[in-house]
Amino acid sequence: MLLLGGILLAIFVVPWPWGIATVIGGGVLDVAESLVLLRWSRRRRAATGSEALVGQRVVVASPTQVRIGGELWRARSDQALVPGDELEVSRVDGLTLEVRQPSRAPR
Image 1: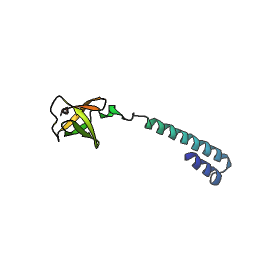
Image 2: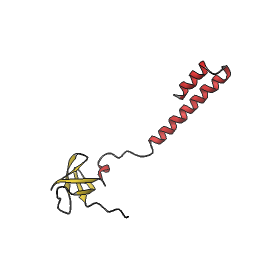
Image 3: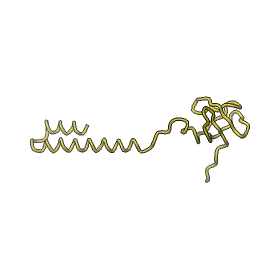
Image 4: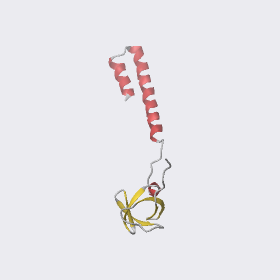
């Protein structure tokens, strides 16, 4: 976009010798902006797949199922699953989530 602005300035506003510098400057700024945005977009990996479920909070829907993000998942726990309880995913085993009591954050 800055390159286009430089070209338009060079054609319609800036006198002849300075028009070349305007186009070059716009091109350099355009490339620099693209590189900065590319680096910014790669700052963190997107959390997807079953790895993203670990640590998420779930609500028990039945003695064998939990609800996370509007979806029902099969669940297993060392304790009895009581509908309405809020638990945390500790591990994913295929299509079954292993859940536990949420860990408490230190105050």
